[in-house]
Image 1 (spheres, one colour):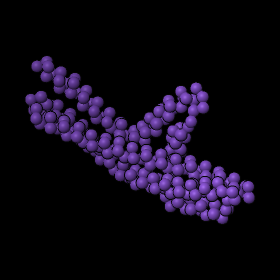
Image 2: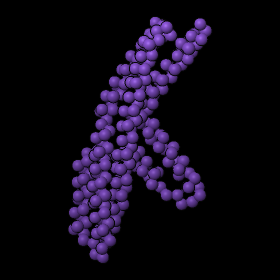
Image 3: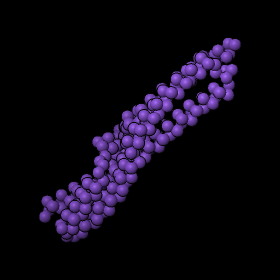
Amino acid sequence: MSDEINYYKQLAEIMYRTRGCRFGAASSMEVKERWSVGTVAFLSVYLLAWSIFSMAFPEIITTKHASFYSAISAIASVALLVVSLMDYAFSRSVQAEKFQQNALQISVCMRELERELATAKPNVAKLAKIAATYERHISETQVNHTSMDYTHWRYDSAKPNGLYSSLWFPVRRLLFRCWFYFSSMFMHVFLLVAIIVPTVWYTVHFVISNGLVK
């Protein structure tokens, strides 16, 4: 009997970790989705603004300059299309909803398990039923969090127990969080840099400089 009770106590800890990872995965998916939509929207407006600017000031944006901006716009349009298709394939909003719903289901199972374990004589049959319900909810979700989601949750939930850990844990959490989002949104960051930097550089060094010289 004690071995079975110990098993269900360990299962309660597993539920706690899984729930935390699922809530964290849902939150990160929502952040990534917003970042993706914001990136596509910003670059679309950015490129449209350059097109309007070139048409509004033809004396500044000559034919030679217009060809550069047209080339950048064409490349960026294809890149934005590819990124949009990739984001659609990832279905981050759908996965976030599944993770959120599963985390709430796990919360119910975990509380029921904890309440039963807290009784004087836990009912093993009832504990087994709760465990079966938990396994069913996990299998019905059809998506699983990654090892990075687990590390993300572990770093976020870590409690410092000394001076060194109280100084290091916030830094570790921040560094990992930056890497966590940058590694998954690299294409979006690269696209922002690859479009904004060349247009600004060309405008400053060729368009504005030539205009000042004249």
